[in-house]
Image (cartoon, rainbow over all chains, first blue to last red; front, side):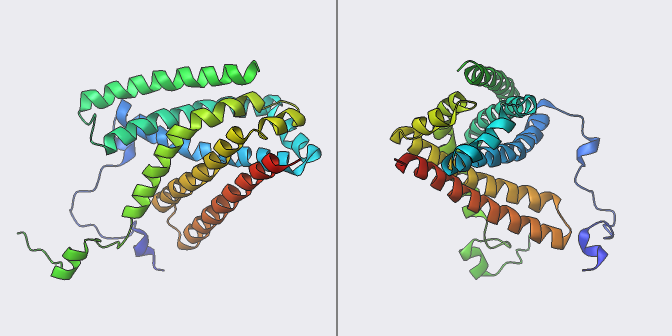
Length: 136
Length: 128
């Protein structure tokens, strides 16, 4: 495939280009949107650990001890805390996206307000989840 | 200048130039709604079970309600993340070989892990 097909070498003439991420001033709406993707990718990695945990539990005591050892180490705890925040963020912001898909909350002030509410809710849920995990 | 270059037939079919995509969009949203409903019921027993002895974990997921919710959650999660990671790869990975390889890897791994983990939950639930 020739280089021009990747876009960089294409002669775009004097047409206006779509704005690049780097030249935009970060705003609450755009930053939350980027984090939705990042947490989605992070949650995918977390899902692999969850799947490993269940498959190991079904396999037997020895297989389970390996993943249990990883998750109960200090680095495992760090991963689980990050996973809790990432999961709660993606869940709460996902509800916000579903409401937009249904046609609600599209005004700028509404989108900013729902962003702050979502952040607070996600934080509360994540801390609660971590406390449940720690004291059970 | 408002010349519509599309043929009448293309307009009737209404699929645009990509020919597909609506189903991907809707499937992502349907699985999202399912996950909004399932996650709270999955995550509490899961968070409690994490770090507990093997025997306690097994007895938790022997309960039909915990097992059914966990299996549904895992199938929905891996379906949802397969669609999501596909979009991320399509947006950021441009080198043709790497793009094809990573799309294949995501689709196969996500499908495989989804069924394998749901099957593992069923094995726990049906174990004696």
